[in-house]
Amino acid sequence: MTGGAETPTARMRKALHRARTSVRKAGVDHFRGDGSDWLALAALLLCVPALAFATVAAPAWCAPTALVLPIVAGGLLLRPASLITLYAAAAVALIVESAVLDPGEYGDDDRVTPGVILVVAAVGFFGLLIAQFRSRVGVPWRRGGTMLFDLRERIRVQSKLPHLPRGWHREMALRPAGGQSFSGDFVVASRTNGGRSLEVVLTDVSGKGMDAASRALLLSGAFGGLLGSLPPHAFLPAANGYLLRQDWEEGFATSVHLVLDLDSGDYELYSAGHVPGLQLCAGSGRWEEKAADGPLLGVYDGAQFDPIKGTLRSGDVLMLFTDGLVETSERDLTEGMDRLTGEADRYVQSGFHGAAWHLIEAVAKDVNDDRALLLVCRH
Image (cartoon, rainbow, N blue to C red; front, top):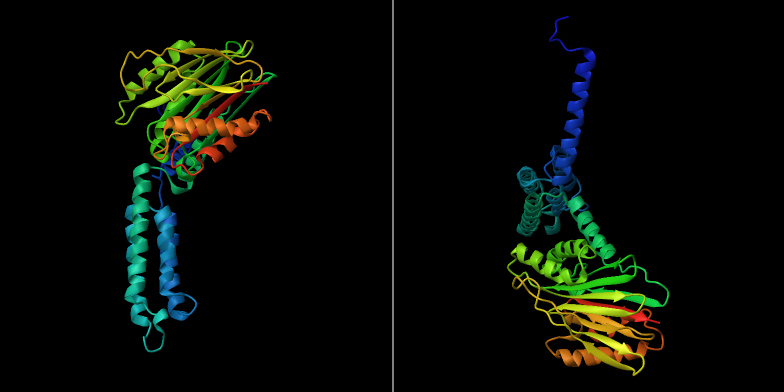
């Protein structure tokens, strides 16, 4: 045996390595939508003559429009180039059906009429649009919905408020515009300072619903990483710098940052162009407006954010919300806040348990804007 010859064991290891690499690459290509679709194409091409034969043999049970079934499946499974081959096969099947089905023997519903051709062509056109979209995005249709669902669940998990010690109650409700699953409003929260403090950031990204969802998702991840990693006074300046670096055409956002000492009830409220918060003082039974100074996020560099300080005593409630809850084209901010406090007074005796969702329903149920409400109560 020469020195350059490979042993059977070495050849087997190389073969196994190539096989693993091929399987891994096939898996990645399948996830991205670049994997081979010959198997799906072959199955759909077999369906076309089968449907054509069924139409000719039993037109009362299998109409010519049945050809839209493999066309729809092709739009979801095939790449645009393969889809053209399927369309060609469907066109041939329509020609054969038109030639074989005798108008005198079958009724109009069982023949290939111009209306049938238009229906099949229209479905094929929309299927091609879907296939081109999948090809551009690079995600198979089976995984696209899964990815969106996963993103939505991650946003919900990230927006969950941490548990608070005995004597405190917190809750948050979020309603996207138009009943969608994604919103331009989001919340990030964390227990900091060894668990003795609660930090919450409520942000309203410019736009609403799906238009703002992608930017809200990116910002929520960035803000979640900044929260607790920086001193409270440095959070909004860092968030402002991050937003400026994105260089979005519509890149501004409003935000409010609450830093609450869970032992004493003292808090600081930082605002970046956000609507004022409201505090219920149990001693007087009145709602007080809490407005801190600060510009919008993402407008200019070097912005300063000055906090307003306060204290939550026994029975006090702090409400933070976005402008979609209190401001619409039909009512101004003052009127909306008056309506919100009027509805909130009904929950004073019950301790505001479950009040966040009901307040949004009562104050801004049919508003076509993202709405978010955060409640922090000290019992």
